Image (cartoon, rainbow, N blue to C red; front, side):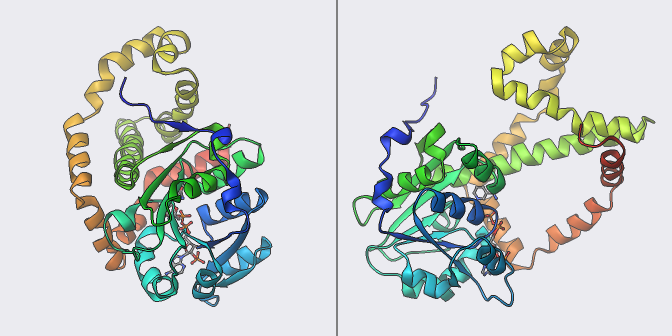
Length: 330
Ligand SMILES: NC(=O)c1ccc[n+]([C@@H]2O[C@H](COP(=O)([O-])OP(=O)(O)OC[C@H]3O[C@@H](n4cnc5c(N)ncnc54)[C@H](OP(=O)(O)O)[C@@H]3O)[C@@H](O)[C@H]2O)c1
C-alpha cells in the first residue's frame, strides 16, 4: 500500500494551546461560518473580520450569529491567529491592503487552502507562523457533522514555523472544528493545493461532464427527458454512499446486479481517458491551472460568466428543475 498518512485524533491533540488566544476569522462565507461557530463552541475566543460593511453582506450574517465583527485591519490587530477564509483569488488584494502591514512577530497566519502561499501571491513576513487546516468538505457539512458530535476528515500543513509550535496550533484548530474526532493527517502546502485543484478538475469536472454527456446522448436518441435526467444525475446517489461505505468490490459483487457488475468492469474503462487525467495532473503540478484561474479572475471572469449563461439556459437544467418539481428529491 502507498503511504497512508499519520493520523491525529482528539487524544493526540492539545487544544489548550488556543486558550487565552484570539482567532480572527477573515471572511464569513461557507468555511468562515462553519469553522468560526465550531471553534467558538469548542471554547475558543473567535472574532470575525469582514470587508467594507456597505459592500459585504456577510458582516450582517456574522453579527446575527453573535460574533464581534470588525473591519479586517482591526481584527488582525486584535488577533493571535489570523485565519483567512476569503475566496482564494480575492486573498492577495485583501492581504496586501488590510492584513500585511498589521501583522506582528509571533502571530499565526492560517489558511484553509494553500493556493496563495504555494503560488506566491501572498508572501508573509518571516516572523509569523504560516499554517493550513482544511476539512475535506463544504462548510455546511463541516458544521452539521460538528453539531452531531462527529467531524470531517481533515488535513493540516505548516509552511513557516517561526514559533517552533506551528503544527500544534494547526492541529488544535482541527480539533476545535471537530476534524480530529474522526482523524486528521499532516500534508504539505503543495500536496493540499495541487491535490485539491486536481480533484476539482477531474472528479468534479469529469463527473459533471459525464452527467451532461449521458443526458445529451439519451435525449438526442429520443429518450424522454425525465428518464434521461434520472439516469444521468439521480442514479449517482445509488452508488456513491454504498461504495464509500463498503468499497468498490463489495459493492460490485454483493450490492449491484450481475449485469451491472459486467457493464462496470467491461465498459467503464472505455469511458475514462487516463491520458487526459495524467495531462491535467502535470498541468496542475506546473502551475498552469493556477495561472489560468488567476488570469480569469483578474479579467473579471469572462469565460465563467459566459459559460454560466449558456449552461444555465440548457435543456438539461430546465429538465432538472421540472424533475425536482414533479418527483421531489426522493
Ligand atoms: N467551500 C468549500 O467547500 C471549501 C472546502 C475546503 C476549503 N475551502 C477554502 O476555504 C476558503 C474560503 O472559501 P469559502 O468557500 O468559504 O468562500 P466563500 O463562501 O466564497 O466566502 C468568501 C468570503 O470572503 C468574502 N470576500 C470575498 N471577496 C472579498 C473581498 N474582496 N474583500 C473582503 N471580503 C471578501 C465574502 O464576503 P461577502 O460574501 O460578504 O462578499 C465571504 O465572506 C478558501 O481558501 C477555500 O479554498 C473551501
